[in-house]
Image 1: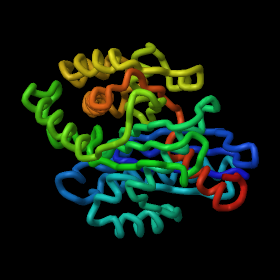
Image 2 (image 1 turned 135 degrees about the vertical axis):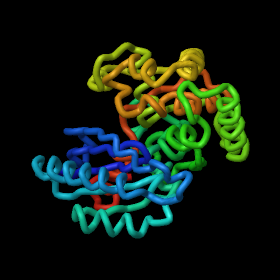
Image 3 (image 1 turned 180 degrees about the horizontal axis):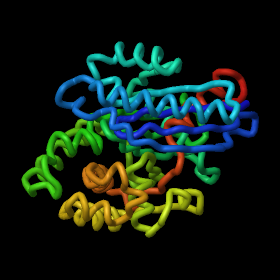
Length: 314
């Protein structure tokens, strides 16, 4: 069966068109748009009209792409910005009326669950207990579970209210940010990590998902396009993450963008904050390396649908 899954995050909206069957998930098309749905949500508590208009345009385009590929089902899962917004009911109604698509706002725990299963589906060599980090625009998910074990095999899942867009809007009023702002962002994030008390340790494989990690891996590799994601494993060592974190926090917007125009277009302003979160998490849990997955929530939503409808076992 062919279906489409759309992940509407705080910064991006991501499309997956895939075939689903007993053999699992076979991605056919993947696209990315920078909707910045969460623009101002942390401060105002609402999704603004301009952001909703950008979302409408993107979802209409994604629906056209999906239908051109002959999909039988279109899924839409929305995350941090949508669930934080006081006008989320209006947002759901707006999407339904303007695009004809469903708009499921996921809880933080569900986002963590399906991101974990989606991200780990990219690898067939993982076994036993694994940890996942998903750094989004508005939240960061931490998960510990058994590779290949399904949603029931998760030992820990937590969504933290810290992400690249939220941290940037709350603390970084200029780029590069003032050292005092960086320290305030570090203090805020460390407090959330201490409260989360996640059972992560350096002995288990540590997998990363979402745009910040993918972009950092491509920038480090000097890749000229997103197509490089399909070639081999991408590993970010703790030293590499720390080096980039320190450097990015000293650069202007134009200097960050100049590092890789293709990869950082649409995220150059929030990229330093996202890498800061990754550095703080790896330091807090004394993690040596992060294996970056090219898959994420949208793949997990497709797998969830396949299991609920008997196309995939487990």
